[in-house]
Length: 199
Length: 130
Image (cartoon, rainbow over all chains, first blue to last red; front, side):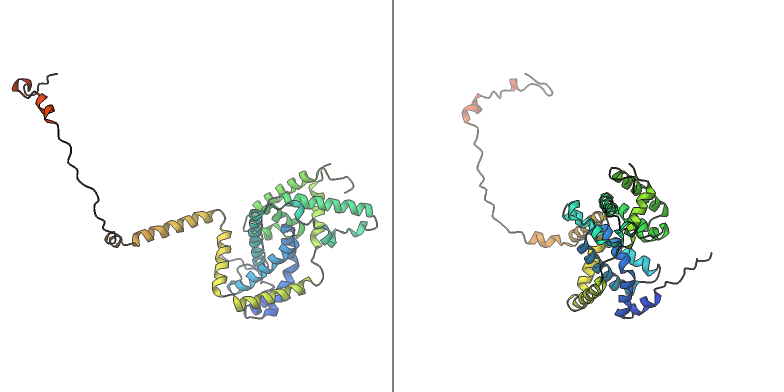
């Protein structure tokens, strides 16, 4: 039996330098994956301050555990796993701590420059309708369970593949597909009243 | 009207390019280094161990209570086995007995006299007379 060879981790050089104590190398890793992790955590928490604190914790945990990183997976998968675990733990604690009203969470539209649809910027009516739809979509997302929202965030928003998500969540591809399908149906059902033909 | 899955996916994809505001990562890195330095000075290995343990314990899910109960039970059992019992017995305080023996009141003689103890009332062996 031959072991399937994996392509080398593109971050290997930065990881080795960071493991040797080069803080600038770790900074480079933060800058490389920061935006992606920000998106993941923000769409899960819907709270800017919580996202910031969680990201600090995620990178601190990664920095402390970097010496134990043996390269069994890519750095990208490894840091995503840390982010997912810490975020899910945080959400569990937050639910226990307080029943956070949906209104307390940000609707995120004003923070998301991508939501300004450049094709319809000249049409303020259309833009307003799109913004309203995004708010409804965010509300529908918040109603999903944490594992389902996680899969939707990683697949639909972050553009990760089923295989990558399965690796990060340590689940089978079938489970990921099934969660995604169920989440889409939930979103479809939640949006049916606010959906207009022009979208 | 019900949206199609594709329409929902398209709407979700609009969020893909969302990023924090300009300058966010510079401030983030400053804070990150500040926190790391602070932890290096004040935080010891002990606190890191505690936080790792608590996060590990938290990540165990519902089974953590089973583990916790098991560990507590094992600790109690070991404690019970290792506790010397003889010491406990020797240390018992000796208190004097405070009870007085009171003689039971004897049957009055008149009652004894009334009893018919003659051989005719005793009956034979194995015979009950009512």
